[in-house]
Image (cartoon, rainbow, N blue to C red; front, side, top):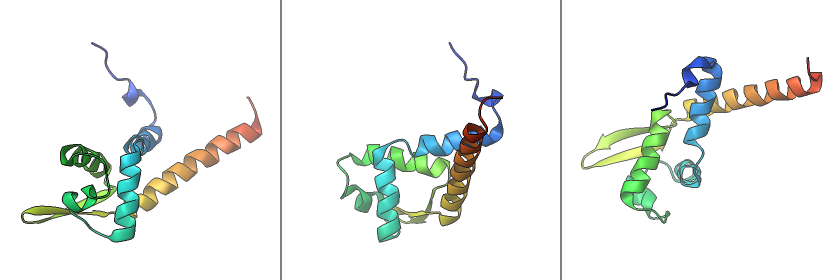
Length: 111
């Protein structure tokens, strides 16, 4: 059995990888855009615009919740999901920092 060696990398890179992993499926990107445009929604309301089962959609929502891009509140018998704008802004900052560092390294050339 193989073990992940992700913990051997800098925490900034691991943090960025977590965000990018959460964004790596088209359904998750569509969910984020839908919630940004329409505000908070239940899984059932979100599902109306997706060709996925409720269970599959719930797994995608869970992936977005793990990195805190979404928040939820319990409104019995439903959970209402909405975007956490503060985390969206943090993620954008981390992504921009990475690409700025990448561009700077390329401009400076090999060491």
